[in-house]
Image (cartoon, rainbow over all chains, first blue to last red; front, side, top):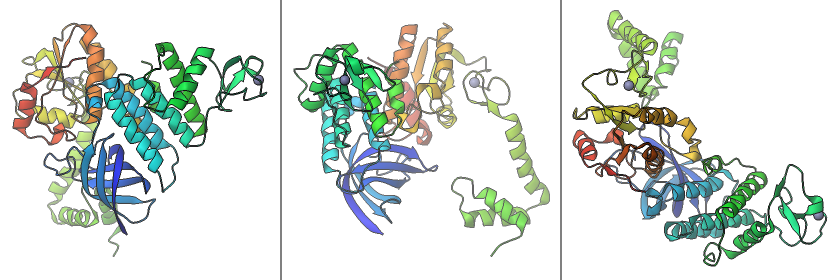
Length: 244
Length: 200
Ligand SMILES: [Zn+2]
Ligand SMILES: [Zn+2]
C-alpha cells in the first residue's frame, strides 16, 4: 500500500456504484491510474467540481499496486478549461484527444513530456481562435510521442521523390503516384500534405501563420484519426461524432 | 459458515443490490425468515409484479404502467413545455416540488464518447420528433451541470433551435460536477425558475 500525492489530469469519470465514482487519471510519474472516489455525487461533497474530465487536479490517493484500483483521499482542482462548458465543438475536440490518452497503451512511469503537452494543449484550446488546428497539432504530437513520425521526405514504398499522391497509413508516409492505392492509401492533394507537414512540426503554439481551409482540416483530421487507430491499435468513438 | 442453500441463494441475490454488503444481506435474509410468511412473500410478489407491469413511456421515457406514463396522459399538464433530463431519477427530483406543469423527456444519460455514449445511444431522435410536431413552444434542458452534461445541452440546443423552439437551460444552484438527482426541492425549483436562453 502506498500513498501517492500527485498532479493529474482527469481523463474520465464514470459511475462505479450509486455513490462512488471511478476516476481515470493521467499522472506524470505513475502513468494512468484508476481510483474510486466515494460520495462525490452528493451535493455537499467537499470534492465537488474537482473530478470532472479535462480538469487538472492535485490528488492524494492510496494505491495497493500500480495496476490496481486506488482510493482517492483528497482532490483539489488546479485548473479547468472553462471554454469547454460553453462550446460544444471544443468539448468534442478535447474528448477526441482524451480518448486517445484513455485508450492507448501507456508506460507506468515518466509521462512528464506527455503530461506537459496535454496541459499546454488544454490551455491553448481554452483560448485559441483555432481550436481545430491546435487539436490536430496535439494529435500529431501524440502520434510522434508513441514513436510514429509521419514521413514527408520520400515515398514510403519506393523511396521516390515528389510529386506525392497521398498518404499510406500503414507506412506512416507520403507515397508517390506510382505507389498510390491499396486499403491503407488516402488520396490527398499536395496542399493538404504540405499543411499536414507544417502542422506536425509546428507544435501546438506555432499555428498563427497557418491558414487552412475547412476541407483541408477535415482531410488532416481523418488522416490523423486513421494513423492513431492503426498504429496505436485503438478505436476512437469520438471520431464518429466529428462529422455530423 | 455456509448457511442452507436457499439462504445462500437469497443472500447472493441481495448482495447484488446497491449499498448491500454480505453482512447486511445476511441480516435481511434472517429478517425475511423471521417475518410473517405473508409479509415476506408480499415482497417477492411486489418485485415480480413491478417487473411484469412497469415499462417505459413510449413518449417521454418515464416509467409507466401503460403506453403513456401518468405525466404524459395527464390532461392538466402543458404539452408545449418539455423538460429534458438525463435519467428518470432526475425527473423524480423535478416532480418533487410539484410546481412544474409541463412534460418531460428522458435522454437515458448524457453524451460521453469516452464511455461509448454517442448521440445515437441517447433518446435524442425521439426528442427531435416531438419538437418537430409543432406543438412544443419551449424545451428546458436539465441535464446535469457536469462538463459532459453541458456539452449535451449545447448539442441539443444546436439541433432544436432551427426547429423554431425556444431552448433554455436550467439556472445555477446545482453545483458544477454534482447532479440533479441529489439536489433538494428548493434548489431544483430555483434551477427551473432561473432558466435562461442557450446562446450559440
Ligand atoms: Zn513510390
Ligand atoms: Zn411519458
